Image (cartoon, rainbow, N blue to C red; front, side, top):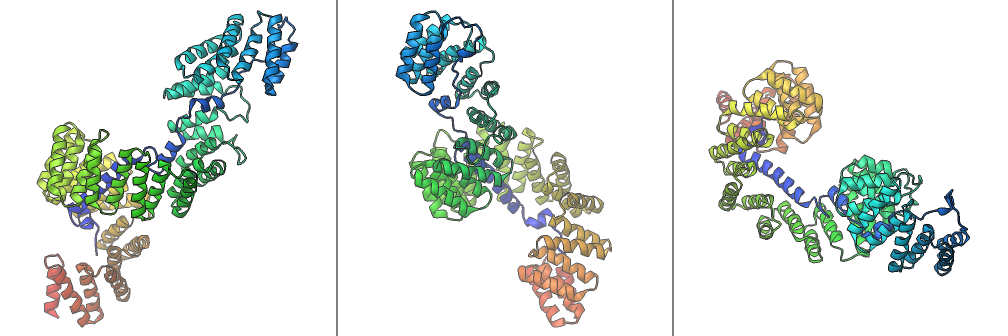
Length: 632
């Protein structure tokens, strides 16, 4: 039967390293694209986190109009002011101004009169007059803060941000409960990317708001999402948003919080609502959410709807390319990425995605040229150079890859990554001694990095230093106790070294955590059969095949256990299926030959045994096959 040890499973260290390099490449490309417009979930986050313009920010804040009618110590006739305030609400500003000015002539020292007049000027965009009136209100009325808040809003609108901040801080010093000032201070901190301070101000600015108020909750939700506090976004927006809510950004932010907490259906519902309000804005995250859920057709349709509204939007072009990439539409994906770059998408980010596309489609020479463009830019990183090295390796330019990696290791000698990459390179070229040297250099810098330790273990394994490999595999498992692949790696090494008890324990632990782990079921079936418990072995092998019915290795194990248990017909049927899936497998041919010999079909047995020897003349079973043939 076929036991899946790490070496046998992947056949050579070079294949192991191809796997590791592929994982490294995936991580590199992922980190490169997890910015605006790329990386699926990160694309959605970026799309919903764009900083609004100050004009739009101010629109989300409440109006701090001072309701002087609630004052208990009014000593003047406020009839004209009441009329003015009522007219303001009706947007009849000319008459409102007349009434306010008439009141001020009668009461020149009453601050709220100037505040109402300043508001009327503000609403008519007569900002200089508004500042004069509001400043007078501040001087006359030392008790209330609303005039200061209006002044702060004007300074914000004029981009006089420091003056706005100074004025609004005076407002909260005068009135610690002025939520309107806190709302605007939150916006200023948001503009300065002072996320923690902005969150604090916005949270204070929400105190006293109506239950159905949305306003700055959108700003606060955006910041919660930036801080990855998605549950807070959900708690903030879920109670106030309904399908009838006409606030596309709020629906997008709530959808993104759902998406980030794996509530994809709820996210899609929010994005659909946003798309009905604003097709260009809502359809982009909707398309990304569909892509994440594997609904590529729906993803494409949503993004094409966004394109109808904004045909030259670079982010939309980029996201259509990402979906086309998943659909296997290489030419369209490439065309869309290039169009996105041409229309303003960040060039290096776009080129990284293009390189990933080219690597995915094994266009390694093209990827090399794209990556050289990236490296010539100021935004290039060491990770970009690693990806270039990988592209060179996959295109067969090993000398160029080695030269690049050696240069990086000299430039960044105290960084483990270049040494690790060099180790992978030498593993690919089967220079295992050099691989060991460079993995050890990486290990000296990062002694607890499981990827480095596992790669070193594999290098030792290929060099025949199996005890060293076992020690490292044990350390990797200690560092990553929940990693099934690393646990299996260790158990298979135990089995290879004849440490049956440790191997059995390892496989059983894996199966307890991951009942459908086929490799562990298969190997445990082998060890169980060796112990003589054929019924238990048969059950395990059957479970392994159930996890992957087309796996020829699992079928070989199951068929051989049928043979050991004396069920030669079931053995023949199972091994025949395995051989049809892997016609070049010498072990399957050998096992099936022995089955037919037992069934009395010597001619077929001879053919299969000869085939087994032809395919592998040095294997453990080839000598036995030769002896059987000699005795026939």
